[in-house]
Image (cartoon, rainbow, N blue to C red; front, side):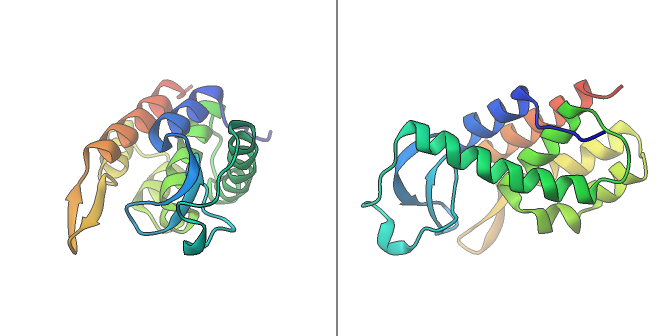
Length: 155
């Protein structure tokens, strides 16, 4: 059975990323547009390139499709669409490489307890601020929403 990102997971991605129709630099200094799309943008696009909301939706779907492939390859145990979507949201934000090398993935594939999965999930709420790893409110909210969806999706 092939998993698909649930509507609830897409809502988490959209709410977390926000919609910006003009290219900007994200906090990590990466040119970004729409719902967090970075592909094909350069620093020269920042402040200049614009898209429509329909184009932002198209880019989101294309980005999600790529992360769905990544998550499908990485997860070796059966999961529900909500659980799959929660992991797609995680990978959308942090990259498939972060998921691939994470204790979170190891625990999911080992069918660890939900409390162990939660501990591994929620620790991914930090970003470098002035060179120091700092918990960020937005990331804390996103990780909790993703984990809540993952847990609610458990069979």
